[in-house]
Image (cartoon, rainbow, N blue to C red):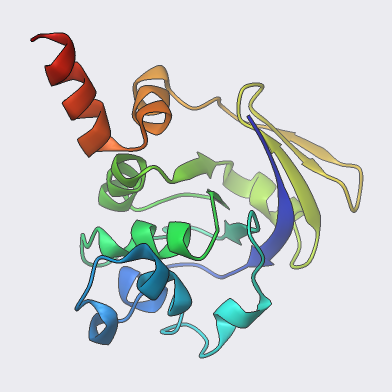
Length: 166
């Protein structure tokens, strides 16, 4: 699967309250959450985002509370992939459970800049910076997580598995 979009660079230790502030947690509607994505980081941030844009973060993206609303908000904003130096572990699992792709690239995240156009090849484990021509090789999505993504997240995955056993 290929995803092409503009990079939106954010810093280190972006917590789930920055991704979707608590005041917006009155719903799980992805459209409503997406419209308020990153309001805790920068009011109006979402106005710069187009469908398939990609967040590029420093270390520990998604730290803080374990709210599932954070990956739902990112998906609702049209962001299918987050690339970072590292992720908070519970956010990592919640993201895949909701169908959001995370790619951990370590220090190579510094090679990607705000506004660069990126092409992410999930099957090959490659991020090509179409602005600079540079490529980053990353670990492909683990098969167990790819199975969740293919199903649309954990709930559809479990439903499919249960239906197969009937």
